[in-house]
Image 1 (cartoon, rainbow, N blue to C red):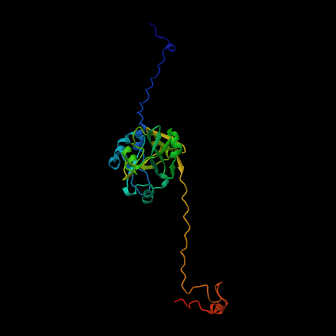
Image 2 (image 1 turned 90 degrees about the vertical axis):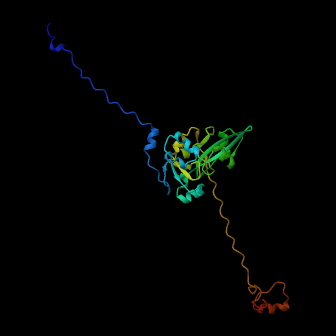
Image 3 (image 1 turned 90 degrees about the horizontal axis):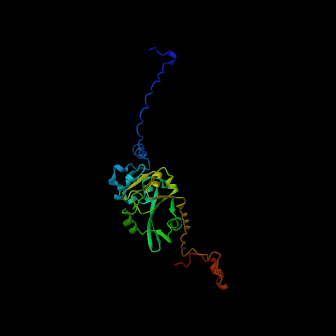
Amino acid sequence: MRPSPAGNRPRTVPIEPPPPRRSPRTPWRRIWSVAPNPPVLGSLTWLPAAEHPELLGAPVAAALSQLTGPAWVAEIDDELADTAAFTDAYGVPLEASANCVVVAARRAGQTTMAACLVLATTRADVNGLVRRHLGARKASFAPQDVAVAESGMAYGGITPVGLPSSWPVLVDAAVAGADLVVIGSGTRGSKLAVPGAVLAALPAAEVLDGLGQPLAPAAPAAPAVAPAVRRAPDDSDVGWGERPADSSDSDRRYLEDRPPHWGSD
């Protein structure tokens, strides 16, 4: 058999090695949990919340796994849990805190519980936007005992994390857009710090523009009233050239020349 001419020989095509297999991407939820450093907020020491469930209310600790991002916790004095006292004591800016208020909405004899999350520099528009959004005839802040019993959290520590799944959680757009906000932890003895986007991603969360309304300006202080000056008995306008209008002419010279201290005893 004659060999094939050189020009008819089949060409050898080099086989390229397969591209290296890429390692699977780390889920973004796990990236959140390992990447960020603890925040610097006021004088508090912030710790990973998932590692310190003892600092959280029971419903909050159970719901941490639902968060799509990081959460930190800081221990505080439970007497300083209210926003104004907390801000003064720990140096956390007021605009970095968010308040969670519990609302009871009523319609046709039915009551719906909901939570509103607004910046501490604003107030929730309960009778306006909240009432209309929930389709209620009337909406008002829930009584303290009802809010505590229904949420399972301490008053002053109620937070959107861990609320009953049937509750709508209305989040103001300013909270959702914040890099980090300080909220309750289910107990008065600590606070949580959570990115606004993580709160907006809660299962029952609904972001509403205009939910937080500016606080009413404080009423101006009443002007100080100078105390009435009590005049000494001899400090009189009568005498030394002064005389009462009803004095008789016969007493005129006597009253004009009489020193004011005469007759004061």
